Image (cartoon, rainbow, N blue to C red; front, side):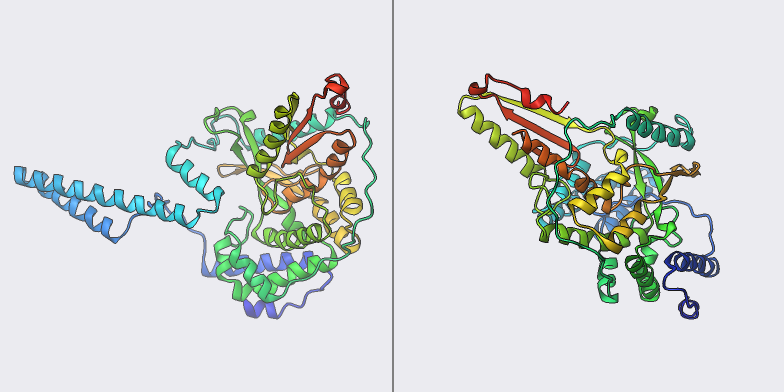
Length: 440
């Protein structure tokens, strides 16, 4: 593969063509060294099992076979003793396994919650079989019609115009990455990808010494030319239950989660780091947005809102709290408005703006249910759920909201698409809620 890549001299301005060439080459090499074959799936092993527990299990099975063979009482007692020893060993190994996870991640609430939830809560199936309640085309049509219906119901007339934002510092180009930086990025990246990946993500990571230069050429070519290869803009949606325990046979209980190619995630990660750095250095983040930011969490949002409410109550003033949860918020983002936010509110110009315009243009998706793919559909609205850049772009999309709330004297705090708006009912104003009416 290295020889074939070295003999290919692509046009540096045509990153799309080079990306396609790498995919074709990977397919050709895989057909030779790893032709596809049917494999029987194996059950997932318990991660806490060790050599000690496996030895106890072998002794337990051996004593069980001996007892069934001779039927003696002494053999039965030996089997019971070995079974108890095996159960005690598994219990001790399992306790030590989870204790180590909790101790190691004592300052990582996300992993702690996920670990405790997996132990204490029964996990309902999160996907349905292809024959449970329709097929991939039914899901495809449902997701498209849902977003189209919401978009059609949105009024085009703005009651409260978006305030003019002062000119921010400019980011006119995206910096390319070196081989060492890309190597560190690949090493940290989770091995998750898409069914459309030519190589499995784990193989991408293992073969990086061979594929690294080509991967760097694709990423740096995209950053310098402002063009995102078409293959990196194709998403496969896997329907996932919104809430555990929901009826798996009802399509309305599912949300679309996009799976993107591994290379696409690496490219987005490079852009994400530069965009976050620009927002932080220019102080462009919304102060009261706790989603998708380091050092901000549901805890910080909860503490701020509760503290303000308690302060008002201590002064004998009632408080009106309005909780907003936007329907299909990520999927209804208007691309033209988002690009305007990037340009006017964030200061993205030149080739950097061209890159984001290419990133949003001609995206497409399909739905995969079991082994069946639906037809392809263009992504006319929204940011891809499951992408690295999607949440950050959504936070940028909502930037004017803070200015609108402040204009009308409303306190607020946002976490992703959840928005808490509150205001004390002052006696001087006759306990008026007039400021809330402007929101409608």
